[in-house]
Length: 195
Image (cartoon, rainbow, N blue to C red; front, side, top):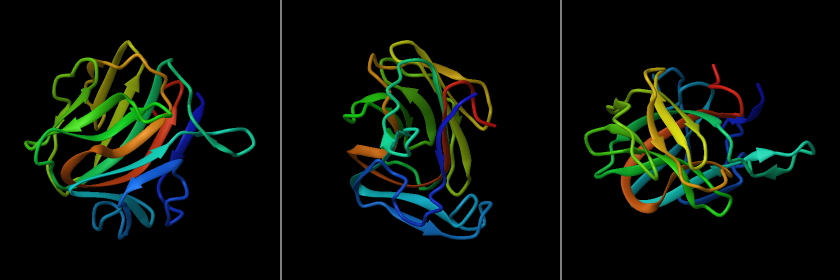
């Protein structure tokens, strides 16, 4: 197992990101769902009214330089989300993107809280989310092949990812959307879901 990258916003700033767009903030709070963080001291807040905002992370080189994953092979992603306001319409919450920002696979949530994996095809509903609850979301992405999404370790729901090189994990969206979500504790692995 090779962990490619992980984070939890504990620097208290946006320095873990390869890039950010729009207005994103970090929340401080008590852990374990009591406040606005899952653990530690900080969580990323993506609050769109409507608007856009993205936080993109790739990998690090052996020399510690930020870079991109440059993968087409199966790659596993994990992150935790907590909605304060569900989307007004079907919206991208998180995605695997190329280094240029094109979407390879995405996690979408609609106004009813239905979470799906999307790109060339759309999965069945992986879960129905409600506000003010932390969820663990996992994606298994293989470029141009069957990929999957699951929530809180439940059954994987499959879809097909785009035929493009995976550059990194991106939270938020570049499409005008209306939702408020907190993101905490994320990871990327090249062998299996991170436990």
